[in-house]
Image 1 (cartoon, one colour):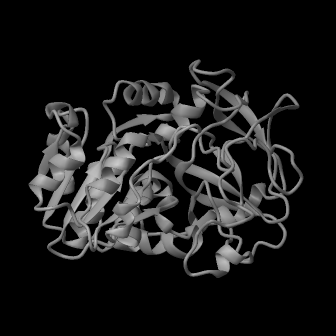
Image 2 (tube, rainbow, N blue to C red):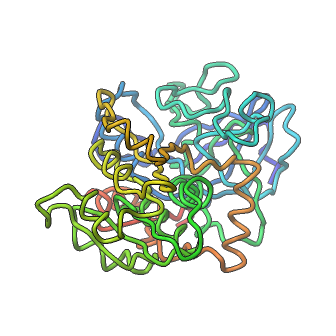
Length: 380
């Protein structure tokens, strides 16, 4: 694979020229990796709601033209100077956050929030030289969260690339790059429900379903799904959800409904919506004495969390998580192995597959609420 090493590669990429307009398949030039970087051949990528959010340019500084995409699986084509943990031919997952291995966060067993490589949605260039590796006729095309996987080749910081088992099917494990690990890890790494316990999951999108899957794997006996769309319950049953509450069906706060259902509250709650009201409800629905609530969803910038301090004094715990507390390089290979051993089911998250030429169809399916994960096959 390294006969292209050190050379500019011309390939196809789906370019977003402006906000909320269909992506255009263009021929782009992808520069070789510089020091500390890796060039990947992307074989499969999937669409996450975060891509759609920034493509729509809602609530943040728009940056176009840009190549989106951050859930993917591929093969290392070449590596830049100083990269030792990866070599051409390795199977890998690029991740929107990273692990430099040197900062206090990376050296801590308790954190995955790398100082150097933590997600930055505003940056459209590489850290090494503040320049893009993508161009069309000499004009730079911006990167997205350091991954830009809607391209047949992409350049990523080596600290954001997890080397995985080459036997793992990339069209399945690519979904672990973002949303599935975020929800799964929120439950298994942070909430840590005990076998036989009760868990409430707020929001039954992809991340919430992954949180429910984490509760199922952990052996929780009652998994209560909370969502404003009742039709989501049927699908959620596949992920272990065995009870459902729609807050709109009740004339009292949903936390009171859940407390009544569970003799005082659930043992664990995981919030996956970004709604500040859902966050408060998730915290207030856990049992006093031992209840733990975990916040996953990203709130609006002006939101404020309000609850009575007695809820803490009565021994309820509130936690937050980023990417399910997984360190990308250290932990992702182990999550892939869980899938390979049959402990984690990924197929049920994948509702659609489209060829790269039809990438806009993936956006349509997500905007209509018809897909959990749509896999985009790079090679036609």
